[in-house]
Length: 586
Image (cartoon, rainbow, N blue to C red; front, side):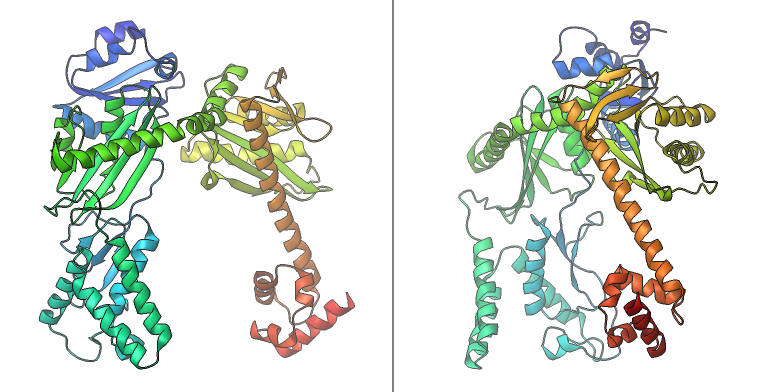
């Protein structure tokens, strides 16, 4: 069934739709109040270049009907998380903001946490960065004597003698005492700093009186730090509610988001992000906010611009969304919008350059090889010394950027003397893609091998034996060992313009694969030399070799070690003397 016929049969009900490419991979997940109207809109009228590019890659359409638009949003977010589609808006990373929390235990303590899923009346934040949170925690721990240890010890610790802990390990502490301390900490974190400043000033004067000038100076710095971070702002909301203010601005290609975290009526922190969008900007913003608050604490109230359709998001987040149009609240919202607009103006050209270096170059590489854009590229390189200590590396680039968590290194196991690049390539590709099949791992859109026909033949032989249809190409170097051209699997040369972004991306990939392989080879070779030289020394066994390797890394560095240093590692005096003597004669 072609796409037009399929679209005619889509119902006019709420739900989630999925666009698939020719490989059957989901490239975009959307939601709609009316599935038929929304999906049809992609295939009629004019669109910007980015949405047109998305439509060009749609080979099939699937959809799931839901009871409501809210259910469609929930389903959409789950599908995006599961399939990570290329054209959907994603949070750039899994970073969450730190909060300060007073634990709800018999003997509470104050901690920094990023886990805000559990509701607590003693959770404060977010803080703009972990350093600010740690500075605040340090002041709290110095002034308020809650426990600092993970588990209560059997006897008092230094904090008790410094009067920074009540000592519940050696004497009973009532909940009434804890309640008073928790209320004082809560006041401080809510912005009522009078009591804390008075306490710090008392400690500062006492330290000065006792001629402890360094400690007095430390208290003075703490006072200045607190006063600076709680200084009045130009816009100050007097109702003291915790709320987030979400401003945004978008161009034809990008969205800029600015979120102010208002705590105790003042801006305590901000979150700023930029992303590319492919369909409707407001839909992309709604998805982004919904994703954001799956990780962050949802405040009692959120401000959004007046022209934003809040109904779906308000139900999803189960919180009040306010859209002010006048007064201080409007000024605060407008400030967030202005910051988003300014950030987009300043960074848009930088974002475009970054996209040209990465994702846009990936799509051009796809055009050069006449394949679907290879959003994941696996690149392989081999390294050995006269056939010895042979290793291979695999580096992975996703959307034009290195994904180091997917890198893999291989020690070549072939023992029959056939340690050529050809046999190494066959072995490592078989080990890699047999595992991909067995464990149903993600397949790349392109495999790049370092070399020409020999390496491509090795790769083709393995892929055919595993019945894998993955595009393949070789990166060929010139006489100066620089990236020269692409060699397709049918041995057709693809010339590369050396000033183009796609050439530079391929060169970066080839250099990274080579670097990773060389570093691993050096490591393997040095361990081999290290072990060989130590094997003949009496008293130096496997455990001793591991200790020496961990500390000194090389034989030359062991030569500089003294007898006492070697004995500190747990090596007997006799074995240590044998070692020093053997290496001295080496």
